[in-house]
Length: 137
Image (cartoon, rainbow, N blue to C red; front, side, top):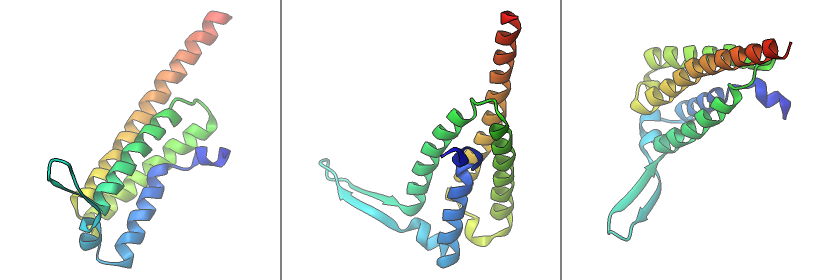
């Protein structure tokens, strides 16, 4: 369970998206409805694979914010790997045709928020820890 502290979860989403992209036509696969339901109002609700990935990305971002509150060696490694994952998102968005869509862009922006917020939260947490440590001595 401790090894999960080192793994940036957006890297897992990136791997899942790449599997979807390289096993078929990503533009079709991401836009394909997974769930269809008729609502009480009579409206047809459909959730595509891309929308499901975005929903998963929101939950992953929530978990990553909690992981960012730690001030340990694992958090430093996690932030470095998260930055690497964001760079891969940017490169794939610009270079790989199957990644050139809104779903991938939104996931990449979530990864950017993870990187920026992770560093910011860690710095604030570290300052608080230093202030508390100085007050105790």
